[in-house]
Image 1 (tube, rainbow, N blue to C red):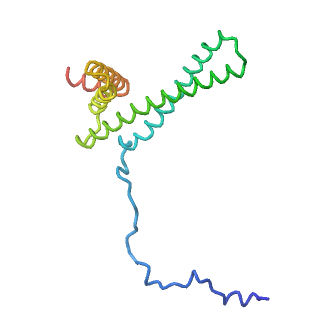
Image 2 (tube, rainbow, N blue to C red):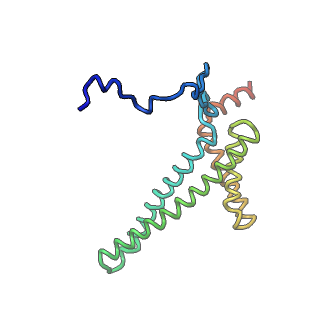
Length: 181
């Protein structure tokens, strides 16, 4: 039996160390994140959430479209409920996966162009957004030929420009005010 007085004499091997092994610095050692203290996240930090949310939105929209298609195609057939349920679920999963893949691919292209433009121009502005949108549309449709590539670029340009007009309304008003005053 160990008495209370003996427990004070027992030492843990974890507390027996030579303090000279530990470096004694006067300055605290911290790891600072790139862009710490910035008012907003950069394009690279936002790319991951944009890609994930695009895939999620694509799967939801595709699933709803698949549900509609599944109900529409199975309503006229005289089949069992199990068969109809299977056909509806197949349509939901196929359309959801297809549209999630499409939205995710477009988001990866857009994010890659946006990050590359931000790093090369050393600024993040609406010009990067518009050029990234146009380049994404062109790259996504590039396998369909020159005409489809151009149409994809125009669609990407239009969507990116619309986004910039909606989100940067105050900045655009200030630019117009400076031009006409």
